[in-house]
Amino acid sequence: MVQPTASLLPQARKTSALFGAPDGGYVYANRPTYQHRNHRSGISLLTGRQTCTIVPLARKPYAPTPSSGSSSSSPALAASIRCSAASSMPGSFDIPAAPIMIPESPSWKEVDKSICAPKGFSAQGMYGGLRASGNKGDLALVVCDEEAVAGGVFTLNVMCAAPVTYCKEILAKHDTVKAVLINAGQANAATGADGYADSCASAEAVAKALGVSSDKVLLESTGVIGKRIAMDALLESVPTLAANLGTSDADAHRAAVSITTTDLVSKSAALEVSLTNGRTVYVGGIAKGSGMIHPNMATMLGVLTCDAPVEVTLWRAMLKRASQKSFNQITVDGDTSTNDCVIGLASGAAGGSVISDPSSEDARILEAAMTGLLQGLAKSIAWDGEGATVLIQCTVSGADSEDDANKVAKSVVGSSLVKSAVFGHDPNWGRFAAAAGYSGVQYKQEDVRITLGGIPLMEGGQPLQYDAKKASEYLKSKADVHGTVDVEISIGSGPGQGIAWGCDLSYDYVKINAEYTT
Image (cartoon, rainbow, N blue to C red; front, side, top):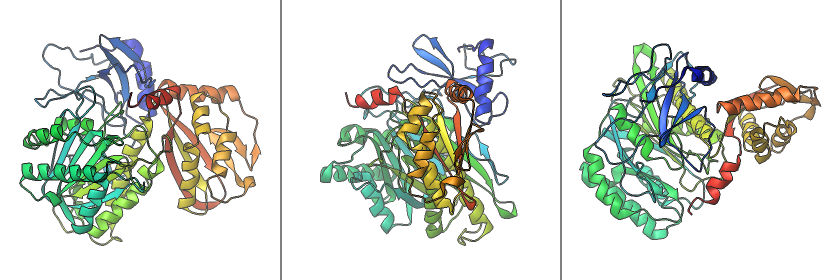
């Protein structure tokens, strides 16, 4: 086990505090050295063929059980090296977990779990040979013990992928499903009738392995557009995947890693939710995404699980609203994928009365928890944007409506000029004002107020004298720890408030996407 040096502690603590983690709530994580990505996500130490990188976690400190032949960190350092769990499943799963920045609430608390935290769910991930190179996991399966109430939110891209079409058709006919199969490597988009046939065959393979009907299986795919799924590899792997389903943290971690593509970190989280009358339920989720991020009524790829019993119409409505306030409010590059999809499953295994009244307190609490969890996953996707060095958070107030505020916020974080300025540590706030102005929302210039990291830049529509060097140092300080740049904009005195998340635009983004298939 690599030992972190004392000289790294101040930086690690700074990173931890930045993401709202308690003192000591940081870990060190071993991951391969990536030649094509310069993430600047903390301090790196070259350790042979791997890089030891500080990874901030907005959750309780990670405390692994020391393995044989390794020494644990000293108590004074209060840090650990996070390594992938040993497993008999084929493949590599050694990328670290993303920081999950979930809003706090007295109604829930984050638990160091994932998609299997809710009762009634199992999962697994493996390398099945679908990726063009490497042996990172590329096939994941999430299964409910009994059929789960299901909902989905999907891309509006006209060139939607075959698995998106397939899932929409299944959910139009059925309220419940049994499983979700996710593959990485090929998007199975723009593949015509043959691609749709591949989706059907994939579902049939899972159904056979689980002993259920194929119309109880949903699908998600990610990878290169225009490529059909490597069906021989998939069909050969599914029986192994289904036979090794489990509920452990390691099982869920392998599933989370196996749905990633250019992601440098896996995205997973879970909440323990307190409903009325002392009832406790759980929500969990995994997601992937790093590039081609500009969802429209959807997410990248994600699966949300819940063990509360919920009526299907209400469940689907809650999932849609939660996605609108989370994944619909992030952008990395302005490109809406052909495969964007989030699937929500409610097992009902926690027991108790079915939540069916949308105006009930239990419905309100559960939807808020779903939204908070998905916002955490969404922010981790923007944080992990291809080539990104910071997360950009834009908060807008004073709008006539929440919808207007969200439009302005997303316009700002989606601006290529804003993103470039942030990467260059240039406090060119005029770009914030311009991006807000072309959002399509009407407001008066004289009502505009803009701050960057608490530094006032504009008030009453008038530019203010400010310390440009201090503002630039603020941006640089956030990039040094792969932190969050806060932009606040007020456009009036209305009740509407909104928030959106994005990332900066670096040289590495162009390098990654210029050579994506070559």
